[in-house]
Image (cartoon, rainbow, N blue to C red; front, side):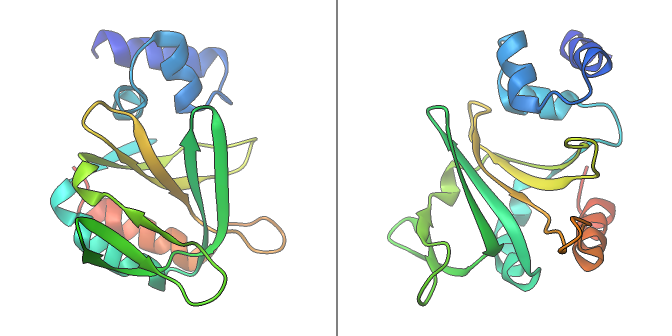
Amino acid sequence: MNDIAQAVARKIEENPSLMPGQIASELEVSEFEVVAALPEPMSALLPVEHLATLMESLPNWGPMTTIVSVAGSIFEFKGAFPRGKPGHGYFNLITKGEGLHGHLKLDAVQHIALVSKPFMGSESHSIQFFDAQGAIIFKIYLGRDSKRVLLADQVERFSELRRTLAS
């Protein structure tokens, strides 16, 4: 176990509710370094070669929570991840009416992590996208039903990604 992995394990043991971003700040490393060092089975890396296929499949997963953090602000969108198509150097999200809109610079994605870390005492799974410096670009958390239980079909899709594609 390397130094970062040991430090991350210590931080989680001391305070299991710490999020990877908080741990990264405390250890003065990138968020990706923390996620990559999370103990098994909290994290698995998905080869970036699967990014296009993943982006194509996400709209079929149903309602999820997409999170973008910028300069300390956190933006959340709850709903289905929209379809998209490449154009002008971006992956352009196609939404008619209300919903998540935007343009993703997928060329900036250098790492994809499948993270399974409890949040506020509840099971939680997310797909996280990082740039070359290890900074988070965006995260997608699996959806929950009205009783705050993870959607079983999404958990199965997430588990299948982990089983078949993750390293």
